[in-house]
Amino acid sequence: MAEFIIGAPLKGPARRYPWLRRLLWRIDFVFVWLLLKGFRLLPVDLASRLGARVGGWIGPRLASKHRLVRDNLAIAFPTLGAGSLEHLARACWRQGGRILAEYPHLDRFARDAARLDIDTTGADPVDLQPCVIACAHLSSWEVVGSALTRLGIANATLYSPPTNPYLDRMLLRSRAVLNCELVPRDNSARALLKALRGGRSVGVVVDRRVDDGEDIEFFGHPKASSMMPAKLALKQGCALVPARVRRLKDARYAVSFHAPITPRDPAADEREQARDMMQQLHDRFAEWIREEPADWLCTKRLWPRGTGSSPSEANAGQG
Image 1 (cartoon, rainbow, N blue to C red):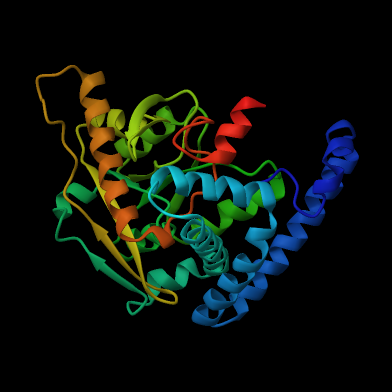
Image 2: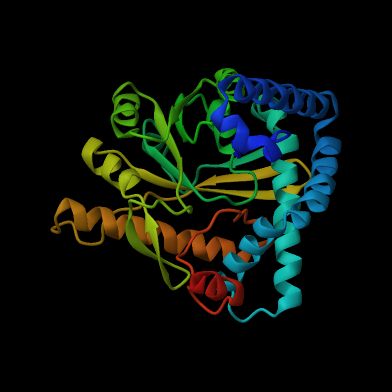
């Protein structure tokens, strides 16, 4: 999340003057609170449709972000023409709008069986408690937590705390109703290991770039990726379970937990086993994204500048 929303034009002075920074944080908090409160008051399907319209209108107007989304898609789908890439990029923003609008309703997804079709046939129930559950930014990955709540599985989820402390506290409170502990991303390995040892499953979203990670092939190009999900599973002796979310219609989803990822060479050392498991995971995610590319939210830079044949990436790399 951006450091400032409403106050973005004043971010320079705000970094110099603490009183202005705190004021802008409070203004942003009120704005987000009112927005989420408004979506909460609407029926969830209506909120989802409205969110798609809002996201589809705002996203393409964020020029640099919209270009970044198109560049990611051009690398992942090199055979698509400019028109198809633009169509997918706009679908990405509509998806982002839906996710925002549905966020205040996560507890309702957990309570309403008609909202979530949960499939655990790929993963033995023993594998799910506790385990490491990994997903991609496909469809509304947030409802994985709602599905775990429905299954009675306490969980801890890795997240990137907003810079705004007021928004961070609001986010933490919103997840408490799902029996979900949010673990800040920085220096999180020990906290996640503690959660696993305490009987909580751990949820991670792993298709983003992690600058201090190791290169894993993703859509045929190396992406710096965290090895932590696989290392946690190996260290704790628990399953690494891929989870997939598919949107059925409006705010109705299918959540499926698949067979655990295991190292193909059990005789390899732990580092190589972890790399192999993360490669398998990324291969699975790429397969799912190819099946439903319009449901992939890829608003962060995934590959180094100049990767693939994206003109704007290449030009940026020359600057």
